[in-house]
Structures are given as structure tokens and as C-alpha cells.
Length: 81
Image (cartoon, rainbow, N blue to C red):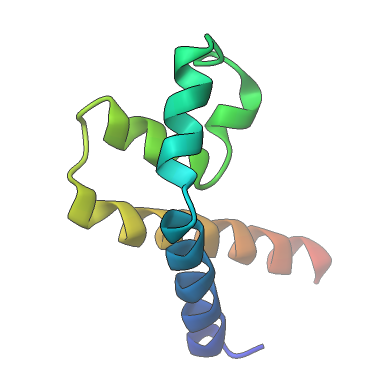
């Protein structure tokens, strides 16, 4: 689909994930000792980990997740071509 349409969808989905508790979920996983696991290095989770570690401000979190997701989508589109 069109890149701008995709970006809007990704933004809406990421915003929704943040609203329903993504930060709290990641915080809980970190407290349980899962900091060095592969799932926490995946798109969305790694940005929240960076935020929780104090390396990113809250205002930068959503754009970071959207950027990482768009980069992954570009890689996937290239691979499928």
C-alpha cells in the first residue's frame, strides 16, 4: 500500500499499543529479569526499553517506534520483491 497510508496505520497501531499498556508490560518484563532476551530487542519493545532506561524522552517514543516499524516494513517489501 501507499507509504503514507502505511505510516498512518503504523502510527495508529503504535499509539494504541502505548495506550493499552506497552510501557507497563515492558517495565514488568524488565523487573522479572528478561532484559537480555531477544523479544525485548524487537521493534516496539526495544524503543520502550530505551525509554525506560532513560535514554529517550517520552515525546520521542512514538516516533521512534513508527520509524523502526517503517524500516522493518521496507525490508520486508524489498525481500518480497
